Length: 336
Ligand SMILES: Cc1cc2nc3c(=O)[nH]c(=O)nc-3n(C[C@H](O)[C@H](O)[C@H](O)COP(=O)(O)OP(=O)(O)OC[C@H]3O[C@@H](n4cnc5c(N)ncnc54)[C@H](O)[C@@H]3O)c2cc1C
Ligand code: FES
Image 1 (cartoon, helix red, strand yellow):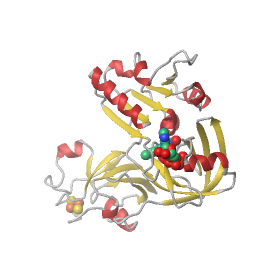
Image 2 (cartoon, rainbow, N blue to C red; image 1 turned 90 degrees about the vertical axis):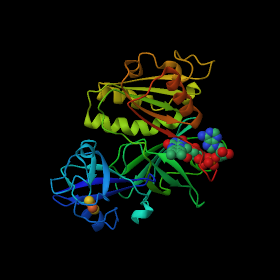
Image 3 (tube, rainbow, N blue to C red; image 1 turned 30 degrees about the vertical axis):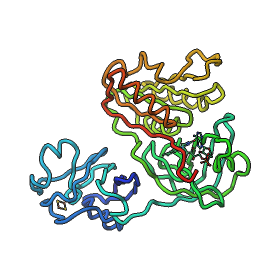
Image 4 (cartoon, rainbow, N blue to C red; image 1 turned 120 degrees about the vertical axis):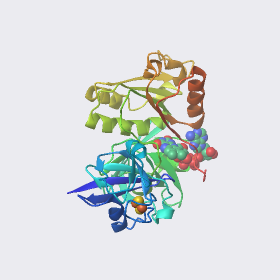
C-alpha cells in the first residue's frame, strides 16, 4: 500500500511522489531523488519542518519539543523525518524546488478536441500519455507548437485522468490562441511543464465564495469537479462575470455541477451596459446574499489582473477579510 503526496515548493512548483505505508516522508523524498531540507534526520534539529495542508498522518512521539512545539503541531506543521502517512497529503515545503534539486515535470499528449465555445473562448482538450497530476486550481506552461515559447493555462478538468481540459481566451494577435483558432487540429502533439501555483483547493471548513472573471472560470471548474466527487455540506457559491453575453461559456457544465453538488449554486453577470442579462455590471456589484454577508467564508478569486484588484479593493472598502483568501491573476505572459 502507498500514498500519493504533493510536495508544493516555495516557487510554486509541485512534484508528486509515492510514499510507502510506514515509510517516513523524508526517506520517500530521497528515494525519489528530492533533497528535502534536513540535518539530523532524528527529530532533533527542526530543519525538516514543513506544513501539511491536507491529509492524514502521524508524527509519533520520538521528536524534541525544540524541533516542533505542540502549538506548531496543532497548526499542521510537521517534521518530514518523523512523518508517517495515513492518507494522501499535500505538503508545503518552505524552500524553492531548485534548492531541493528538482525540475518541473514534463507531460506529453495530443489534441482530442479544439473548439471555439464563443468568439472569445477556446476549449482545448488533450489526450495525455499519463494521468495529469496536479492540485485542482493549478496551471501548467503549455508549449506553443513549433515556436519554443509557452503560455500559462489552468486546468478546467479534475486531476488524475488522461484527459486534460483548458479554457483559453482568444486574444487578438495572440500566439497560442491564434494557433489554436486557426492551425491546430485533432491529433496534433502538445506538451506542457508543471504543475505550478499556490492557487489550489484547500480543505473546505466553512462557506466558500468563488469569483471568476472570463476564462478565470477554468481553475474553479476543476475545483468544483473535485468537490462534486468528494462531496461537501458547506455552502459554495460562484459568481461568474464576463464582459459580453457571448463570453458566457460552460453554463451547462455549471448547471450539471449544481445538480451533482446540492450545496453549490452559481450566478453570472455581464459588464456590457447594453446586455439584456438580468445582472449587469462587475462581480463586485453582486455580492449581496453571498457568504460574504454572513461574515466567515473562504474566497477563491481568478481572472484578469484588473478584476482581481477590483475585488480586493471592494473587500477592503466593505471591511471584509475572508477567513482564507486565494487568488490568481491571469497576467499576460512575460514573452508576450
Ligand atoms: C498563472 C496563470 C494562469 C493562466 N491561466 C489561463 C487560463 O486558464 N486561460 C486563459 O485564457 N488565460 C490564462 N492565463 C493567461 C494566458 O497565459 C495569457 O492570456 C496568454 O499569454 C495569452 O496568450 P496568447 O499566446 O494567446 O497571446 P500573446 O501572444 O501572449 O499576446 C498577444 C498580444 O495580446 C496581449 N494580451 C495577451 N493576453 C491578453 C489579455 N488577457 N488581455 C488583453 N491583452 C492581452 C499581449 O500583450 C500581446 O500584445 C494565465 C496566466 C497566468 C499567469
Ligand atoms: S531533520 Fe532534524 S528534525 Fe527532521
